[in-house]
Amino acid sequence: MAGGTVIAGTADTSRIEAPVTVKAYLMCAFAAFGGIFFGYDTGWMGGIMGMRYYIRQLTDIPYPTADASKEALAAFVIPSWEQSLLTGILSCGTFFGAIVSGDMADRIGRRWTIIAGCVTFSVGGIMETAAVELKLMVVGRLIAGAGVGFISAIIILYMSEIAPKKVRGALVSGYQFCITIGILLANCVVYATQDRDDTGSYRIPIAVQFLWAIILGAGLFFLPESPRFFVKKGRLDDAAKALANVRGQPIDSGYIQDELAEIIANHEYELSVVPQNSYIAQWTNCFNGSLFSAHSNVRRTLLGIGLQAMQQLTGVNFIFYYGVVFFKQLNTIKNPFLISLITTLVNVCSTPLSFWMVERFGRRNLLIVGGTGMVIAQYIVSILGITVGSDKGADTNTSAVSAMIAFICINIALFATTWGPCAWVVIGEVFPLPIRSRGVALSTASNWFWNCIIAIINPYLVGEDYANLSYKIFFMWGSLCMVSVIFAYFLVPETKGLSLEQVDKMLEEVNPRNSRKWVPHSTFASEMGLVEKGITLHVGAKGDSTPENVEDVIVPPTSKGAV
Ligand code: BGC
Image (tube, rainbow, N blue to C red; front, side, top):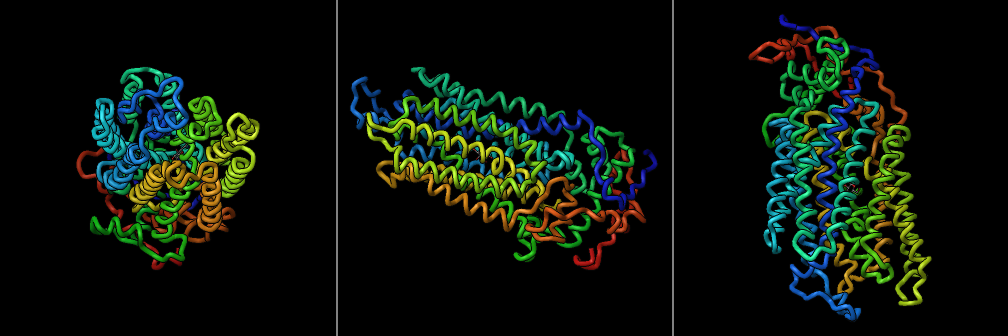
């Protein structure tokens, strides 16, 4: 390689990705660990807000006595506005963290942005652990949230960019699995410490988070950078090394060269369509093009933002954030913590099914079918609650309450196998390289924005002094799931089995409803003239890493339609 290697790419659509070794699979899978942060950090607050010690610490209300009236028990809670603030402020931090991370990922790389997220998260975590009153806790959650924002957006980007196309959906679903494990771990730790009568009751669950930061930060130190980041930076020799590393292949393998050529040609093609000049343009490009073309940047950005919003509007976090408080309010369940633990377990145990389903049935089908199932399950919960399951003291119909809990669990299992993973899988796949980091960042920010809105409004929706929707809230979530299904039907393309560059081509040629039948028929390398002329790389050479002839060889097609 010392004198330079000419890479030319291929016109053969079956050669645009190198074969992958087990080591390479393990690397991708490790990145999924970042989901633990996301899940754990969203999981502990709900439980802590239901803890006796924490309620007394924040409100100064003495513990209710054993013979306390129903009213006195009901009054022993953290006020709704404080609950909203404590839950919502995390999502607020993650929202801004996610947006900033899009810039950072293009500047310092995907890997370093995730490591920076671990550091930021730890700073916030120290404040949360030290806090004995509301203010410091709120600031700590805001900063920790920013760290989670970096991590949640860029892990998706990183995984989608390094994972092999055949199992990309399954590997990114692994990230969702880690989110669920994070929520479960948070619940277990909270369950174990809830009865302590000291600050350990809430400090232990908070402090456990440092472990995740250390494992992820240290692990990523040893993983390679995304080859697509180097292509974006024009550092093609580094891209070749990184690609060889993530595929577990020798750097001079023909497969590595063909895959790299395809990534370069696709990037150059996208730049020829929408050039990126200034910093502002890099953001505004996310909103370029026509709303009526599935291929335009604006459509893809709206798809990502909308998909994540819809995922939140399925209402699943109502159970995870407010499960304990909601089940307590119903006065029909003896141990709300336990029910909350069960719902979390259902979430964890059903998610691995999605590893297989997402590659077998595809993202689009899962979103449509899963969303429809959730509409039905949530309507049933509301109908049961209103008709036979409501709190009638000693006469409460316990079988009806059990049936409601069963349908809540079915709803969670449906989410865990469809909207949970697929929303993340799809946002990692639909953006072209020039806007990918910002597109994923905006989509993730949308997830956190809606997460925040839902966290804030939930206590008011079910609070007895406010809307007091009680069981009826599931009518609302069910109806929003219906909107999600319509969204998926019209706007979400099928991306399974395609390389990120093939997704780009597919979006150009068909609309989302016909995308399932699309098959790759040409490569960017051949269409951009790379196959004839090639690019010379100096892999391993010091100093200038700019390829010799990238600009002359890449001949952009005259118009989009020509490709
Ligand atoms: C969602 C989270 C949710 C979690 C539940 C994720 O995909 O974005 O908001 O809490 O799934 O498993």
